[in-house]
Length: 299
Image 1 (cartoon, rainbow, N blue to C red):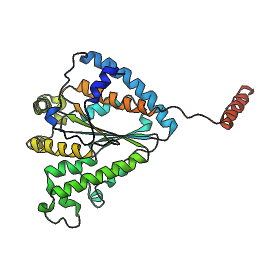
Image 2 (image 1 turned 90 degrees about the vertical axis):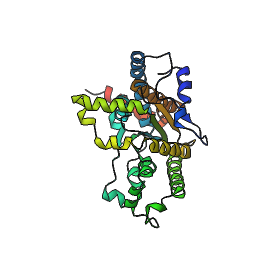
Image 3 (image 1 turned 90 degrees about the horizontal axis):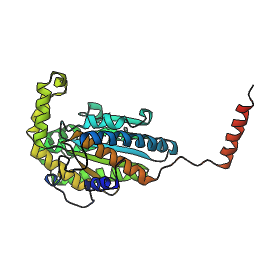
Image 4 (image 1 turned 45 degrees about the vertical axis):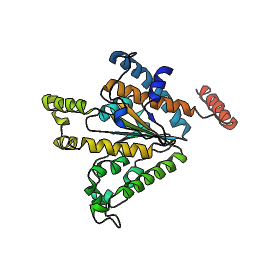
């Protein structure tokens, strides 16, 4: 996987609890000199093999679950990151959810409901491509969406104030603390894309016929709210990067490094858990020997 030096580099993207960050202080591209795209591809392939081995132990132990959250501006490479990271996992133990605008049924429940039912079971990994954080990101830029939730006491957009958002951040922290205490490892990634790189990727989608299907005019309209989204992300990250559910701000201008960094963080977290195959009891060992004897004596 990554070397110890690389792990140190990854740690600088972790937002420490209580630290107030500005996204402009974090790089959007790879700034190191020790890697190139080709070498990173080889490292990622090797690292994914390690992830597969650790996932097998996670599944066998059946104590922990893992929730991986990916948040980013449009065209940041979330889908391709999921695709590459998924290639290192056994699909039987991984579920991927891409959350869109809530349906009428989902709006009839509290905003965390659809995310709770998508949580991983013990021994499983769930990847949430967009997540419950949409409820303090998109809705913060477009507070009129909150009105669809039919919340008691919120009958005008004017009542969606700083106190409202502070309350919602606290709700999210309680939710994450609860599932963490019950065995869910939470890893949250913000893919930090520059505005110039987003423009470049949007133009590629327009100019390349094979990428036309990726372009959505609505994404371009959201780009006009870039500064508002940057503020919303900063507020959310500052309020919800905790010891039990830290945020990692990953450079997203170079997709090859984005994938490698995310895989490195996941692997390091797995390694810290010291997960291993469960030890069998004397009774189970006796059954194994009995089963072996029966098989060897078959005619």
